[in-house]
Structures are given as C-alpha cells and as structure tokens.
Image 1 (spheres, one colour):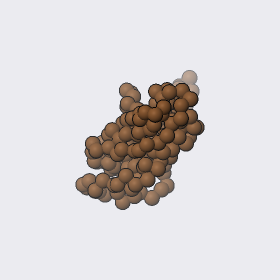
Image 2 (tube, rainbow, N blue to C red; image 1 turned 30 degrees about the vertical axis):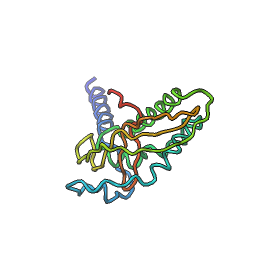
Image 3 (cartoon, rainbow, N blue to C red; image 1 turned 120 degrees about the vertical axis):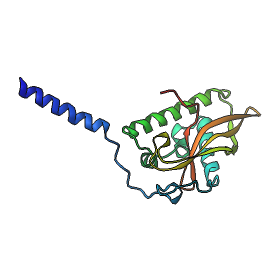
Length: 183
C-alpha cells in the first residue's frame, strides 16, 4: 500500500508541476519598444494601422464573421511573450472568447438588418506605461483606455468604447473591447 501511495503522490506532484509552470516562451523577436531592458517609458507609438484594423471590427459588427475582427485583437504569440503567468494560453483563449462575445453584444446594440459603415477610429488619450511586473507582465508596454469606434447605422452615428488597447512594437491591439470581466 505504501508503494502505491508513493506512486500516486509522485504522479500528483508531477501533474501539479505542469499546471504551475509558466507557459513556454514563444519564439518571436521582441520589438525594441517592448524590450525587457527598458527602464523608462519610450515615446508612445503612433496609431499606425489601428484604424485599418478597426474597419475590420466594423465589418464584423455589420454581421460579418467574428474572425474578421481578430486582427484588431492582441495576437497570441506576443501575448504569451508579454504575460508572466502559468496558464497564459488559457487566459488568452478566455480573452479572445470575451472579445468575440463583446463584438456580439455590440452588434445587438445596432438596429437589426440595418447597414453598418465605418466612420472613424478615435485613439485613447488616457494611457499608462506598464513596467515589468504590473498585470503579470514580463515585458513592458503602453496600455491605453477608452478608444472609440464610430460607425453609422440607420443614418445615425453609434459610438462603441474600446476599453483597453496595448501596443506591441509600433502596432496597437485590443485586449478588452468591453468592460473588463471580474475574475
């Protein structure tokens, strides 16, 4: 009986060590604006192509496939590079699912079957430099709050808040389209 208990304990500890270990570091180059060696905030990157990718979100709001808006969401590999936590892959999947649910929730706020067209993307003004160690991150980044997507539907403009965007290199991505869910 003791031998089987020892085997069970060994298997349990082995399984637990796999659950606690951080996810593997992705193999991608780290942009200079997100380098771990940064000791102070670099200048905030310009909006770049975020407006073009925001157009894809507007197309998804118009009834297109949710996946059309995925290039506006923070990509998986940079996410895994930024996050210093076990279960980062699962957390990424949860955030992407929440993003899709938020797109659906925003769609429901538009008149059914009405055309939806992109009007403009308004970058956030409220931003904060996130040093290493904040929000379980192992790389620094700018985090901006309250960008806006403006679309036209039934001859009126509708404004949707983008709660959080962060940068990876010179590009900006959504991490929380709607309000941040409680954990």
